[in-house]
Amino acid sequence: KKSKGKKKISRIMAVDNSFPKSLRLKKNQEFHSVFLYGKRYTHGCVTAFFLNNREKKIGISVSSKKVKRSVDRNRIKRLIREVIRKEKNRIPDNFNIVFLYNQREITNYLNIYEDINHIIQKLQ
Image 1 (cartoon, rainbow, N blue to C red):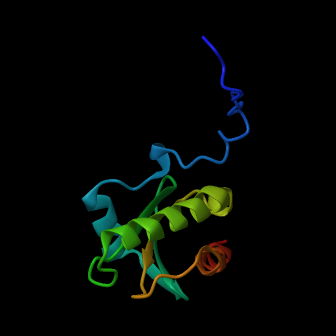
Image 2: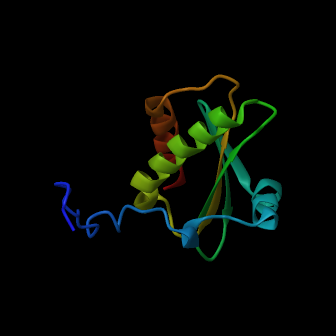
């Protein structure tokens, strides 16, 4: 078998910066309880709902009423997920958090990063 010049890259460094499924809010009931009983903090284009809990779990929500096209909603979710992946170690361990995108316009990575970073500083 001929090699096309691609080398396998070791994923040892990337393991710590992942956003594993064990850290995600997945069930509708979990989201509902955070929205219903949690506290809210808004900064810029992101609103965070947070609720004290035994473990750290993070959810992402982009409303289809605000952002109509699914392509745009998925892009915003990817941007938020990337920020969380990089900054997840700064989030306190005893919170369930849902990051909700609250604008109609699509913004860039830097704005989302700054807003989430500000919210994380408030949580500490």
